Picture (cartoon, rainbow, N blue to C red):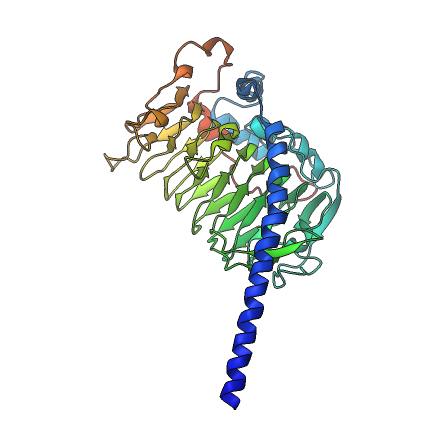
Length: 437
């Protein structure tokens, strides 16, 4: 009799689980389908029809900084000036750094994005929210004071941290629109757990965080806004996953040793800038466009600027499908396979980067790697201007921008010999209130 009762109980639980799964599937289809449709409209509006205007504007700002003598030309003078107080070496940092009142005027940062992420203001219209609790124990009803509670609020917020803290995310952190996560003034490490998810959102700034050893989340019931929670499948193990979103700016962060990618942008995401970041000890860094059949990625536009790809990096810095990608004034000091990969006719403009090929690996000299070089869909436009190629590094150019079609419309970029200088302060900064940052 006891065995029969246990059997009936198991059957009942199995039935309830099946019903919940069906309900979750229906809810998932309706809620997220609506979010996807709304995001598609917004993402199309965020697309810039004249992308060379965007690349020119960034190059113009950098040249002004150089020609006005505000980016010194010798290491000796740079070091002397830095000892006297504060130093910025690129136009994004010029906008907000070296002001002693930065902690009282944090929102000035929202005026500083350049590249395709220009106009990303994050939580500038919101109140300041202080994270005081590093725990992450309740996915459905996050505890006030935690980062998960802050990012699931519906309105705009400027999120800061009360103290140094290491946060282990139990599941992916689903961030709502119009948020700034500002780590300045604290040592904030996202480590050992899941990463950030930006799905069908807009206008998010992530600044001054360290991402280490990110692993997949198992999934389950997770809150994604004040008014909604639902079932999520297993997350990928990316540090930051951008899915169908626009106007995203990731600045002065560091990334290392994640289970999947460091930053992925897929499903029509656009208007993105990744700047002043530091990447180490990772295989597949950036994936921009997940599948050859994702035609919505033709409108993907991403800037990677003033970023240092350092020790232990292997490949995909970035790996691109479709889309338009401006890779400018970055310092590639290490890779083990290649630096930039692509397929499906991407447009990749590489300007003023320094590429240092590995000295002891004769089979890893290529900067550019076409996934299927004999396919017409893998040619695209790959152009190199003012890059520095060292240790036998090679850059294979192709497409219209290599010719004179757009040459008269492109503002001259800063030479790759300045790349080390312009990325000197890549990664999180040690900012102290009442002192220049």
